[in-house]
Length: 101
Image (cartoon, rainbow, N blue to C red; front, side, top):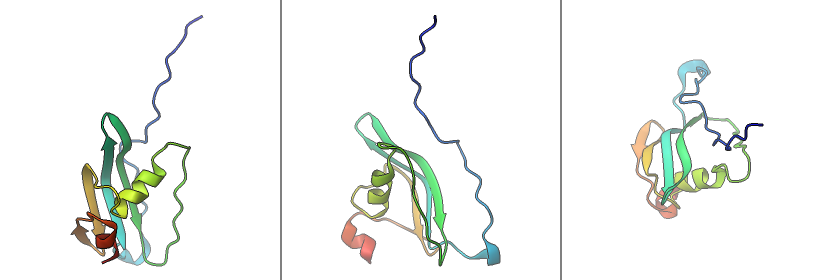
């Protein structure tokens, strides 16, 4: 009997994005968002878009990085990598107060 060590689960390197009708610019675009806490990679190169009028859900197992991702976009944590765009303009969200502006 062979015993295998558990392997970490990771998302595909690139998730294809469906084209949005009418060519709208996303209200929020995140590309390759990464957040580390010491040696722990909490969020690993996450891409997602939110278009005007959309309702979006973020699903995942406990400990998958959902809260960390949202806190990073909201300015609670600074991303260690990646970009955030609001209305097509790259922004640096370094605090929750800045996220509200």
